[in-house]
Length: 260
Ligand SMILES: Nc1nc2c(c(=O)[nH]1)N[C@H]1C(S)=C(S)[C@@H](COP(=O)(O)O)O[C@H]1N2
Ligand SMILES: [Mo]
Image (cartoon, rainbow, N blue to C red):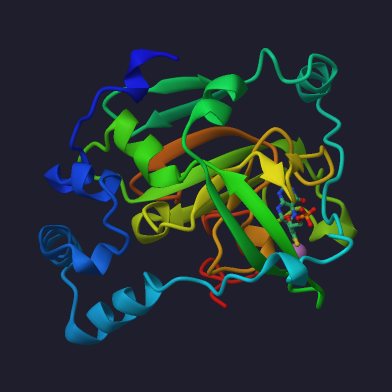
């Protein structure tokens, strides 16, 4: 594995290392909280919101796992480059992490699989009115972003996906380019349950569920759980992406922060 995963570098507001060393809650970290307050100019009410934002989503037992986890939205991206990756078993796929980072990264699936993984059994809630409980495994996003090192001004992680929904009316129409994308803020980037899942219910993630990796951001609704992630871009604002609302469905009128 490349040495970028072995070097320890404090990045986020100078205390990224505290997050890496097992500090489960951002709010337990006075230095980081102070930094966030200063950066965001938070009021007391907003601080309370932040504390609730860092709470954990409910986790379930193995017995609760749904016998069938429905696949929804894109289940097979049509993109040629993606199809080539499927044919090659994702051997040539690289996750790119770039934008407002000190050190852009290109990470292979083998490298991602070799990282310490978090396993969590959670309930996925789709706005269309169905839910499913599944066991997800993959590396936490926060430590990976710390490896890349946030630069001043970075506020959101944008997930660029392989699938293009082509403005189909049944998929919300043409309010923005059809490429699926989503974004989360740094509170969710460093939330302990935010992982890049490569495994569902103990098996390698299938194409229908977003192979090779998909986001799990467990305090939010189904459409935030970006599948087919090709690139994670750190940005200051998402004004210049899509029609400026921070995601494919947010561009079509859905909430950007889809809290549950
Ligand atoms: N790239 C991409 N990610 C996506 C979608 C999609 O169409 N494309 N659909 C979203 C929606 S609406 C839901 S409910 C979940 C479905 O995930 P699943 O197929 O694993 O059930 O993925 C989300 N992430
Ligand atoms: Mo959904």
